[in-house]
Image 1 (cartoon, rainbow, N blue to C red):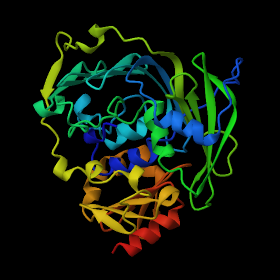
Image 2: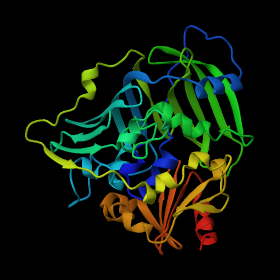
Image 3: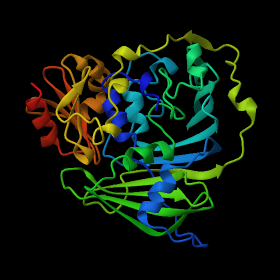
Image 4: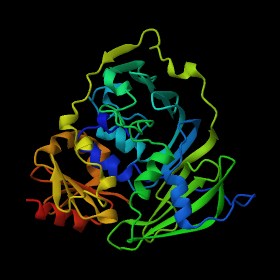
Length: 383
């Protein structure tokens, strides 16, 4: 999910909110064969789609200030090298965005985020990864280690298996997985009337937490009836009547994309920066995946490296160690975001409809799809 491009403070943001997406179109005209909730869950979990293309439209009404496309705090670095900044992540979690996505196997992927009068690209072709911004005609390049091409390695140390998204923007399938991983006895699951997404008939899988200790009220995932791939995800906050974060395919094809789409060459006159392979030993995203926080090996009140986890499932809170808030400087220095982060006992709180983030006075960060008091309690318990 491209967390490797994000500073420490952004990792909990994208981990917790990178799964919040998608509005569903009207019911499908041709009914699909009836399936139980368990059968639809299995269909989604077992899909083998590795080659596809399409356009994803995303809209967010989380209560965050809407930043200009590709906005950056004054004086910050420009171009793809700053694509992982907190402001960049927050920008993609507010307003409306459109991305074109092309995937052909695990080693060929391209995402084009379409801004107003500009475009941002993330391209992987074999061991080469490119990030490009047309706004300032700048590019960044990363060469993956040779062993990442070995089929025996199921996880890429620099880019995860699901690294087919751009910073802060992911495919509906990636986002759906974050919620599907939370399905357990604390979750009610049902199947609603069939829906149509990008002209394809899909099952309407409905997920509803049975606890009021989460901001999430319900989730709707459109599961393609033919391939099992999630095509759209919809998340509604508790007590709300419309999605707070919505994304889904408006066009979709299972045909192999044109190979030329993955052969990227920086345009003439562009500035190019060579990026080092991220050091996963200090990677907060690598040290913990909240999707596993409620499953086998979950650490209730435990920690992996500099990341602590309290609660399980929908009530999970991810925290970082003291000193991590240095990475939050871009967030608190941006005029719009600093205004959105309000003072609370013990720190500053960035509150949204589906996600809360607490930055404590002693330099720790806590994030979760839970009410603010849950974050404050986790911060107090972790001292």
